[in-house]
Image (tube, rainbow, N blue to C red; front, side):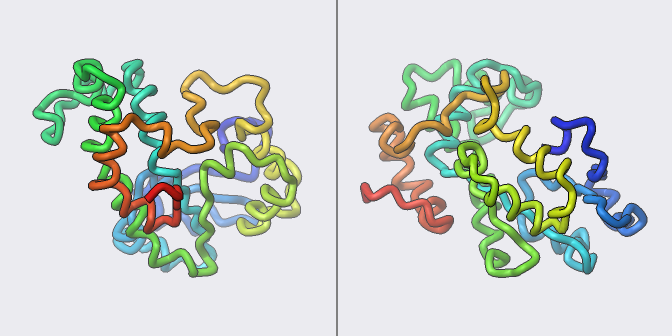
Length: 226
């Protein structure tokens, strides 16, 4: 979010390796964003992030079925270098892009995504231990991408102690697809699908039921079909 509005000076980004020195960036009205993409509870505890008294954590989750549909579309394009070049054991040493492009149906493409990204959702589930901790705020991507209510974004700003910074609130809104006239290039628009589980192919749903449904239930995504 913070990269969209270059005029928002209240956010500084540091890497996870710099997390131990995050206090030196601590200034009134400044958000120091430690990017822990695809992290789990071990990342938080091993890097001592909980030891920083002023720290706050946003946990982003996404409907697993929506993610699968989106990832299959996105990685078919071959826009990610790692997905194009890195052989993966779970995919028979094919790269993710190779495996998706070799699939003979949409169902098979979606199953490829599930075979590779299960670890991502295991990490999300591992964070459930923090969901009731007042220092953590869960944000569902499907809400973030579609909500236009001022109160929704004000709540995020308040949680991060930036409710007095209009530029920060504006940056949150500007970054959301809900306020964009057109979706950014990387977006697949899959978040607009109202019933993503139902939109999966039949074979993909069977695979999902066996291998991914527990992630959905743990994260409280209930489809009403099972």
